[in-house]
Image 1: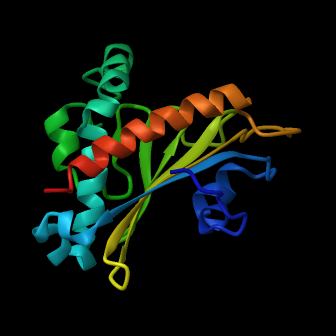
Image 2: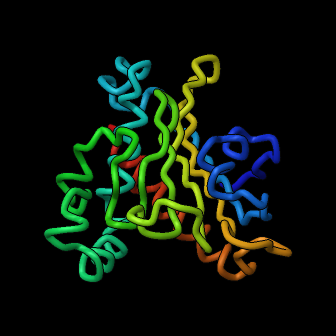
Length: 198
């Protein structure tokens, strides 16, 4: 389900957000949350949850899964080459096994900017080969929180999109585009969670 994203969320004070949204332009944002009973999570991922293995598996499932397959194929046809993007992750096996360390670049459209045991954040909105402030920019966070007292793992997909250059009067996404993005996010959530459950 989608829940409101707090204006005090840590993503808004992260170095990547502050650096790439210097004019503090308004953002289009959404937060999708899915709760899964701990009894359904693969045990070996829970055993190493403090090391971030559950978060990594959630992330691996998202990028290597069917939910991202069409976009990956499209970006591969358009941008994959043996020179400027050869170091990036493109194939399903690469995406399914990467540990997504900071600096990892994904299909010439995403770059990992931070990683903790509970969260992996990627910059999106353009090619990671363009490192400066961009006209269209964003952050996408894949997060997991274990709530032992409730017996669940809470999986989160958080998106924040903004105009990096110039001054904007409002968020960059009109309502119908944000609605379509939410549908896509729900698909990503299903394929990502599918990688961590028994």
